[in-house]
Length: 185
Image 1 (cartoon, helix red, strand yellow):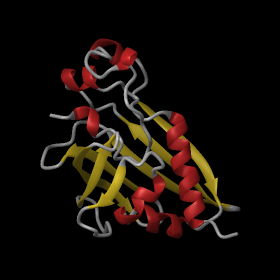
Image 2 (cartoon, one colour):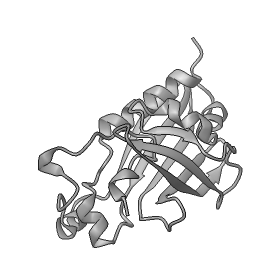
Image 3 (cartoon, helix red, strand yellow):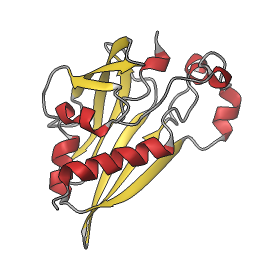
């Protein structure tokens, strides 16, 4: 299992682990249980909730939301239309290790919310999810992206992946890239 390879399917950027935080043994399961196990970032975007939802529900547009180069392409090129749908993404770690993820949609509310869990292609989700909530505002839409790893219970996974694997700054950058795609000058 290549757990360290699939952490970025939520459209956030991660870098290779430093020697001090290499995946093997970086985080013990016990301390991870005491820390917060989710985080949200929010940004006001000058666009309608529907325009933003159109981007988020189209996996072929996800690579444009990730400046790390890890999210390469949508494998099946289908727009998400319902909860329960699975979309597969082609990913890379460091530009050399290519792999695929299955992203299972668990919330689908057009113009309001979309979220998915991440798994290695053909496997069950490992316990982390990505969710985008859209709230109309006076100047557009308040977009909240939540990265939640609270359901990760596998000790090996908790030891291999230093949660949160996608830094807050990278998740804020995802929202900035989303704004660039949908805002009109």
